[in-house]
Image (cartoon, one colour):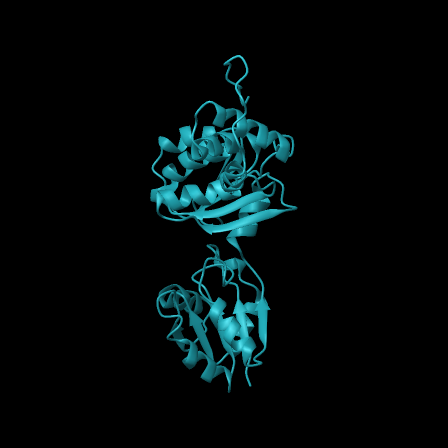
Length: 286
C-alpha cells in the first residue's frame, strides 16, 4: 500500500519550495495536480520528470477510483496550483477516501497564502477565521459577511481582482468602515504589495485603482468592547419594533452596531415583542 502526500508548493517565488517537497515529488509514482501547466513548469524548473494527472474541482470525483487504485500499489503526491492543498482547492474527498481505505495521508508543509498574508498584515494572528473565496453572488457574499460580523478573530479570505471593489464595499457596509485591514496582492511575486488601513480607506483607495493579480484580504475581528449582551440586543430590537420597523430591518440595524451577526439578531427578533411607546420618542442605537 502506498502513501498519499499532501505537498505544499510555492505561491509565487519558486525558491520557497522545501527540500522535502522536492524529494517527495521526485520519489512519488504519480502527481495529482489542480493545474498540469503550472505544476509542469515547477517540475521542469527543478529537473523533475513524473507523470501528472489532472485533478481539479470539476473532475475530482471522477478521478477518485483511479487515484485510489494507484495508491493501493504506490505513492501519490497531491498538489494544488499554488500553496497548501485543500485550502480553497480540491482534495478533501480524496483524503477522506484514502483514510477510509487505511491509506496513510502525510502532510508535506510549506507555503500558504493564508499564513503569509496573516503574518505581514499587522493584525492579530493568535486567532483567525478563514473564509476561503467569498461567494460570487452579491447576496450570498453579504449573507456570509453578516454571519461572521460578530466573530472576534481576524478574518482571512481570497478574492478575485474584478470583485475586489464590490467586496470592499460590502465589508465596509456590513463589518464597519473603521475595521483595520490588509490588502495583500501577488504575495512572494515580483509585484508583491501589502496595503494597510481601514475598510473605509481601502474602499476609497482601491476604487481608484485597477486591481490586478491574486488578492488575500485580512480584516480585523469584531471588537470585544462593541459586542452587546443579549439583554441590550433585545431592548434595542423591541424599541425599533415599537416604531413600526419590520423585523428584518430592525435585525440589520442592530447587527451593525452590536457586534452580533444579523442572523443571530433576527432569531432574537422573532422572539421579541415591541416595547410600549413612552412619549413617542425614538430610541437611538448609538
